[in-house]
Image (cartoon, rainbow, N blue to C red):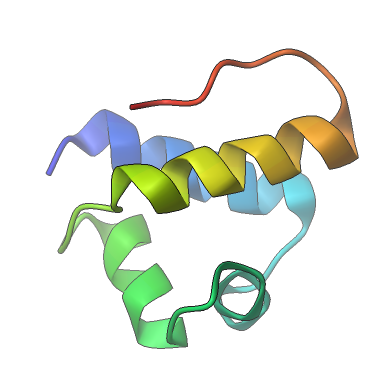
Amino acid sequence: MSEIQSDEVRELLGRLGWTHAKAAEELGVHRVTVSRWVTGATRIPNSKMKHLTLIARTRLGGNREPVV
């Protein structure tokens, strides 16, 4: 997995003020799955990254493009 991608997931969760549990609830996955994305143990699927980025843009403003 790309370290940049795991860093971006971590950054977005931090900016949203979300715990791994909250992110899991919002994205429809298990908390451990989110933890694996953040640590780089597994790659976040493109669909979930797009969803997370869209949520962040909607709630935080800005026009960051989704990472594909």
